[in-house]
Image (cartoon, rainbow, N blue to C red; front, side, top):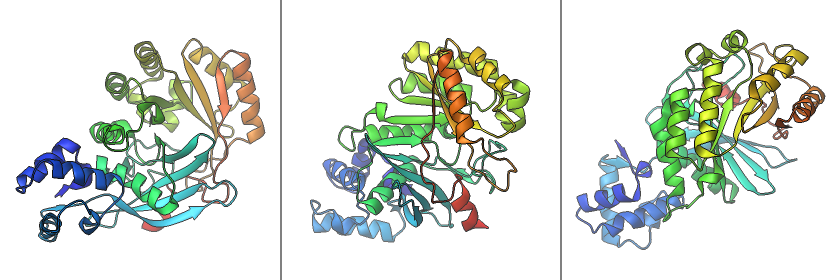
Length: 347
């Protein structure tokens, strides 16, 4: 079934023409959808006849509006972070998580790109329920609209770092970014968008071509092939040295700094030897290392490194000429791990 929220302005113009209306009606529908309006009755610059025609098509099942709605939310009263459980507008009960975060420069939403994940990273809760399906561009946009409606605040930065591997769903993620950037819609700058990958090299190369102004984050977590393959099976297909070469190609092509995400797991990747490997492998790459003490997930059996140790590692990297920070702790009062709200819902 067609979902209107998936469509570009041009596609909605064609949709309007197909129902016997002027193409500009499609642009009007697009603008209402971008504001989070989900009822044709509220699209007040459309005539009553047009609204009724749209409603009739909806009732006949010819199309749906699409998107999602907030099924549950947990708010941290200290920093304002909200973890959402989003229910997809689909026939089956399907859920993903999104996280709303407040910063000095504005509000950021962490968006999911898949229901579940097939990458199988051992420390991550997102894949524990298994991979279900890719999200569409409109379902990703729907997370933004639902979060804005719930909070009453505008979201001006996006990170595609929630459930799923974005480059395993490249075309839909690309469509989502273009919908956000649409001049006649949200007009969000690509510089305010970040996409994170576990290391799918073809996706990195295509992203550099398609979105040279957007930001790229790569999840590393280990700096040897053996160690990385043990916790991130994707490394067996795209080995570490090939991944780092692709990262160099990306920075050469875009002149933009890559963020390397490094989740610190106690006793696994936080030793002095691990730090030396980071310096050796990442030296010379235009990059920033984001150190993330692991949120404990009982099902994985891993514990996170202490924040004190994380700060020591950051200082060691900085001393060696590699920019590094420890991720700000957000949402300390709510479930720590990505995927946990959904896991509780489906169990």
